[in-house]
Image (cartoon, rainbow, N blue to C red):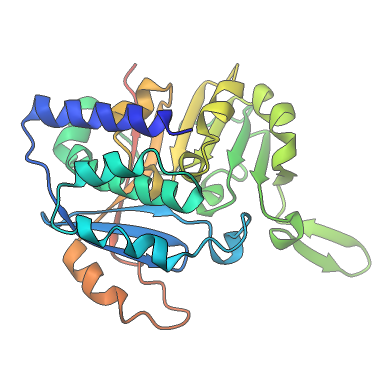
Length: 283
């Protein structure tokens, strides 16, 4: 299961060498809410989804002692920590490893690099066609850019469907939101192969389902990845036949790091700290 992260690690390392990028060291790691964020000594940060809170489909994964045992890596090269984490098992350690790889990917997500190698596009899904069947794996904010723009919109999610749907009981019983067909993960082999557009949450990198789901998209014109967990080197993702990426960069890692320890209930600490981007492969 660690082969995918090993491949990403090697590709990122090769990109650093080719571009003569000086690697950063680990500054700190924050585990909170449903995120792991890794901060480096060059003022950069990368993050990954930790399947917590309402997304705790694997049970309670919070393990502070498991995280604390990596404290000796503070001040050490991030590549060393990534290499140490790659063989680790379990969702929490995979989330940690992806957060490290996403932090290492930050220099590769600069506007300069993205504009040189990819087409920067608006996040409004302008590539959708009215006749498209679209499948989104992971119900989230991206859906608002799709509803009403295609023939069918399917959403696959691991959470109980009743937690995602709206129920209205009046003279009739109605479930919404309108225009969305919800499915459990068990329907992936039925829905994905007939999709014209497949959009995968970056969380599929964490739980290791990315390659399996991508390979089901036999006829898809567009295969995309979205969300903060999708900060991984675009060169790696496009080499795995992903041709659309919608993700983000942390604007000011130091400011975000300073604020994290003061999070209050109900506060969205990430609001205003993320700079979003969307790219298409030119191939």
